[in-house]
Image (cartoon, rainbow, N blue to C red; front, top):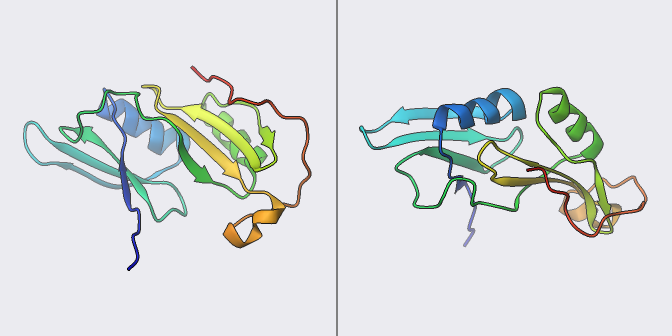
Length: 145
């Protein structure tokens, strides 16, 4: 039996501000924005090329806004992804090179933390294209707050 992760709730304090960030700055696709009732609004957004979406809104979660950390997307080129996000006004880290991939970190306006990972050569079966070599790397993700 397959178990396919399709939706992750991301707790935000201001739905319109978060939607603008994810759609206009990060480049996610808007799939749905539905006001269900006075207490519930459901917004579904999908990263380009992803089979998994995020949900933001009102009345969807009891998590505190900004409390979700370590959301991760895989990208073909970490530097190109960093440059694109920075060009769209997203505060992003420099590329962080580790033996298990190249990473770029950013956070949404509430502080929910994201990583973009370029997979290394040896993980080609998992989607890595990895035509790169290791460089110097920090041992921890830089803060973007």
